[in-house]
Image (cartoon, one colour):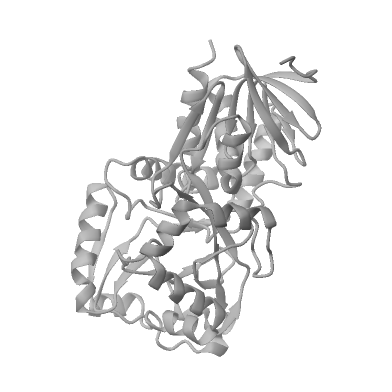
Length: 405
């Protein structure tokens, strides 16, 4: 095949302008100043999807398997995120988190979580019922864990600031640019976009909800497919936000692949309750009516999704019911916050989570990279990717730069 005409040549092209792609670009330029770097983003702004539609939590690393990339990079990333926000004058608050056991049956799981947190180097404290009540007078529970390091920030603002710093460092930032294909030709890759073709010695893709599609665009089969799940939230009315002082989470249920409904503070003073976790019918399915024919075909053809549904069908039906009926959602919130009533909760903006799924129906829990030719793909970067973004960015930069002499 004759290579198409090329408009520009760069050392590294980064595809994806969410916080992971931005952090990767930052790490590349910090590791090798003067690098010719181009960052491509299909939207007209930075961090428009998962980065700008998450809870804003700076995670501590409590939940993750010891020795996993998630555990290690979250611990590194937490410190860097707080430092970056302080240095750049961005909002960040160490408000702390309590993980609550609702009754005695959850105490063994709470203790196992304590041990896991300690194994990951997380500062975690046990709280009795009385100690929990002293910290959170309106929260019900038999016992809890306190994680003082957990906090909140505005990841959309973080993404915007990283982009501004990249521009100052000479990066070529291209919004409104959609990648249509990637081909390796010898020591370089050709990146075809709707605005012309770019030659790059290395390509890094960090496209979140489109990560598997970009692996396919490079001519390879992705190690995992992305299934979009919509997370639906409500927020407490302003006059009721004083009911919650920390971030408040339930003990994770091993029979359910997500964390369940929890209460999170935000840097603007609000409190959100949620999320539900329902299958989205579009990769940008923020509303129930958002439906993509392509996504429907992908979901219908997914053997992995059928196997996942068979395994978690009860939990899936419960999530769909909670999404459809506000009283059921309120009931879930009241397990933690008994005083709340339906009138206290107002529907808030939803988010869409890129859940990576293997062909055998297994949820990919850890960060996942895939090397194909001159391309390094970030196939899976689930929560806490925003917290860990600077550490993930360094890991990406090390892998990418090792391929450039």
